[in-house]
Length: 296
Ligand SMILES: [Zn+2]
Image (cartoon, rainbow, N blue to C red; front, top):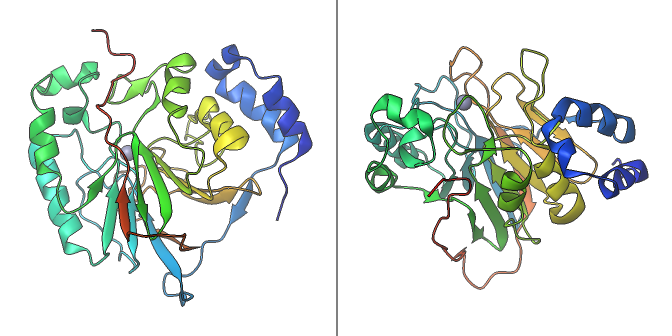
């Protein structure tokens, strides 16, 4: 497997916050220090070794009828954009989908389309959802473990989930590149095994049809200089699905919907050895959610 190249360490050492607003410029420079490698995921029906947990990744289902078969596994991960615009009724429908799937655990984070959950979203007003809908939406999210800037441990494997992404057309959970997002990524625990965010990091699964990269530079910096998760699962950019690696972390853009919002892209499956655990499921502390960047 490729090692993390030394020039990349030098790059991050020299990093200046102002670079975070130029993702394409940063991507070109990292490219010199470290190529992105495509990885073929394991087959959906590959045998699982004793003492391992099987994860099944999906994302961006957008209230659409699934046109794929969801493979079996122990833990289903959904990296956000369950709905079209986050109406309370859409979360009720999503929860029915979760209930219908056989996985013992389902872990879900919100995405930029979940306007009803996010009081920071200017566009929520367009859909008559500004204020007051969050509690109703949350009450409708059932039959899954919902992560919003906190963690859960399953079979001793720590999963941390966060919905935030760089500003994207005034949708939900948008923050400015730079200090706002840096503050959010600082909350990711050092010992995270599986990181879930809605948006991609720079250069992995983040290439838009326009040719521009939507990935977050500061997220990549947190991953490569501190957190080093085994897997990073996200969605958001429907047109760049699949798995890649930097030699240390595997990156999975698990978008189920394609660019035309048809839910046809296959789930990605991976296995991890179980960690040490006393309890099969251990929930992280649920700190009150501070909405960064929200003008009080
Ligand atoms: Zn989406």
